[in-house]
Length: 107
Image 1 (cartoon, rainbow, N blue to C red):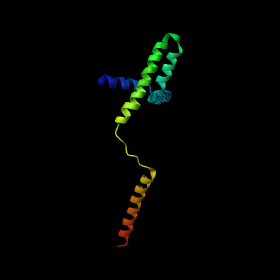
Image 2: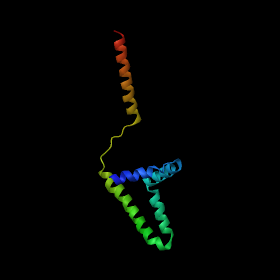
Image 3: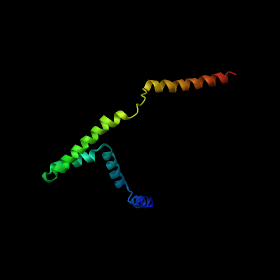
């Protein structure tokens, strides 16, 4: 753990607007897999790395299939609220608060 903090402190010294922009780009690109897809296409482009590119393409497809067909169905069911329900609950609270104010002001 101390090594990790020392490394992060060392890395922090390179902070500037250009590096921040580059970091944000790679963070967003890595979140959806665009970097890995581009790297796979790059490997498939050249004859000498085509076997590695094919293996990486198969791995990406299996990873996607495992996530979408096996892991997502195991995820808990989420409640879905539409905007009308949220608006009614907010307005109901707001109008209830006004009624209480009127009730107390009449005394």
